[in-house]
Length: 498
Image (cartoon, rainbow, N blue to C red; front, top):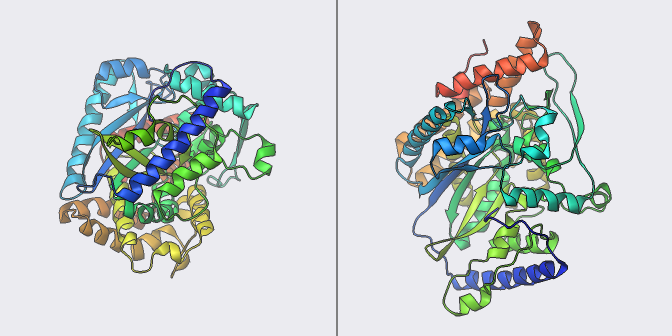
């Protein structure tokens, strides 16, 4: 969420002052955008990867504080639930062999961390939603020990005024009918089941809108070919169950406000943009602050004094609105820059899959921004949003709308249209031929095989149940095999079902 917060009650004066400070921040941001006061020496990428922790029975291991102490590496930090940690990768140039080097570094870092975690009888898992979670693991006591998480939990439930309803119906598994999950939660801990990979791309202010719009166009495709979250609380649900779960687990709206059309804080958005300012302005206009803790700095005064403002209030507020493609304003050594943060993808299934998903996103995104007639001028925003939810629900079985192709399956769309665009986009970014062929070859093989992390999990569980396993046993057995295959560093398209 951008910073640590203190554990204290917020007053009406805090909220009014915070709103005023956010307006001052918007004024400063508008002046900076008009003046071109941003750093953009070259295109950089960054990556965050959230991980789950399990014990020898493949149950969640609520031990992140112990595991992080044993890993003893500042690149690894806490996440919302005690069975989560996060790996943060330093930004680097997208060009050259950066993707190959990053894949090697990720594998080394995760292997080293996993060995340390084994000292605590814990295993790291790269997966979108941990399938062995049970209702008891969503108890508020399993929040990580950090004031920002408890404050966020308190403020969301204060705003909502009632328990969270988790209500979703899945795609049929095997020969069975659709399965339904309907239960209540008295904390935001269910959000900890949404473990993701977040991709960052530094862009110039004048290019931000095109990159964000392109990312929105791609979100449904990303989910369809990268789904890895099919099970929650023992039920086979969406191929990417993180999508409905994240929205429902952090929803501050009681039913009456939903009926009025009040926007959710986990949000796809509602329109194409012309500037990053549009997104920050929407944040302030539509969403009340959850953590209204203002800083002393006056952003306009800082700008007038020749300093780049921190925009602390805008940034913290932005961190409590979970757009699937989030705008980021940040400072490095006092110099401001802008990033698109792509939050669509689940964690895993393997490091090669993660890097392939990243390369595909960066490549197609860049190619879309170079088109003479932008895709988003040929496609309604509602169609992009429908693709997003369809891709999340059905994975490779989805039918997506794409201008010039009509309704098409994800594998056909990628193989015929988007893979060539990804190659061209990465070439424009200066990515080496070796890196392009290696990473995008994984996407090609996955689409030819039509096997994602989600479809593999579903198929293995269905086969185990046909052989007499009950659902808990099938999920634990599947997860153990999943972990072994992740450790082998083979991409998911090559994973056997037996």
